[in-house]
Image (cartoon, rainbow, N blue to C red; front, side):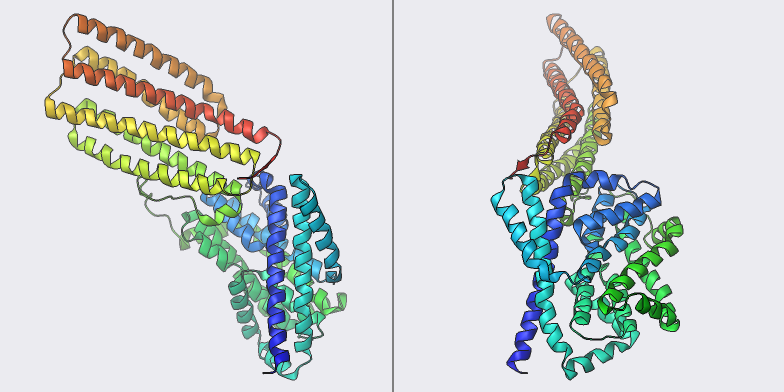
Length: 554
């Protein structure tokens, strides 16, 4: 192997690296420009499948990567912001949106890459405003992408003139081999756009690959790009796994339908060649037309697709809420802070439910004098402490990213909510310990004292359950009910204190029982205070979202 060949291989690899890095820069810049609105964009993907397709196209145009967009959708399903049926229309739109970049580079505008790099660097380095800097980063990323395409195209053009390289490519004249090559290469580099960009670069370099071969390479690229989303879905929820599987089945179905069609009906590709004489444009247009035709074919069968993947990945028994791991957070979501925050919200709601259930269990143990139940409470408290540590760490990871002021403020509120829920768990632990004291020392309470505690604990359980449901649903309309319940709790506490003092005066109160009574009322009062804070925290989060965007370095 001569030095010229080695040099060209390095140059082509470097060009591909620049191309991929340019795509990443372009994606990050566009996401920073539109990131604060990505959640609202995706939330518009309602049961209307046509709107879902439009959202999928739009999001993919923003993030410039079908893989990244699909991983984002998987994260939103995992966070409970999107249903499986809603996601299918979005995934179909994603496959069309990914063809935008290949369409652009097929117009041979890579020679103006220095202009984009200069303008982008100027905006990014000179200006301080966040929006202008992000705009500069977008232009810089696009320029680097085009530069990488130019660098990659030079050695590919040189290879195209060599007989050995031409003879190697003849192996791909077999459609099955071309399909497999597209799958494997795209799965490795995790970008169908880059894979198809290389095919376009070969055409621009003078390599006249038969369009049938290029078409099967494109079909393979469409399938290969699904594997990253499949990997991202492994630790996610069942519906998230199903969404990733839909993406794969959708691409495979399109290949199974249109692969034989273009192989046995040559007039289809001949029509493409007649309309677009330039080879690079033929590849880009086939990519777009194939994805559009697959969409038209499969869009009417969204619900059938959903049922199919539900049979392939069936429901299982509900996961134990007390399991010591995060069920909804996955590291891929950190690429989109809004998704990561949504996942944290769902995890906090789960932690809140565990704490609420544990408080109820502790009160049941106390009133029934059941020491075994008290031991269960102490075990569940370990889960609450674990979730508090892990969710706090997750929020810290989010806060280490470059965030808008709104997202930063929201994570600050969430940290306080996690701390409040953890304190409710601590009070449940205290109540379980009172049960153990009763068993050990035989403390006695008067029927009147037990009646008062029963009424107070019922009101506290109600306010905690309501507060957690309000936080889960962001339902500000029920906040007056929280205020009313808190007033009831305070009134009951006043009655408890007055009656307890009267019993002490009359010397009808067991000293140990009196201490437990007082401590329990204090714990229940703290629980109601934390519940009120949790409920009203949604106002702070909403206020953060309504503030104008500002640059924040975290």
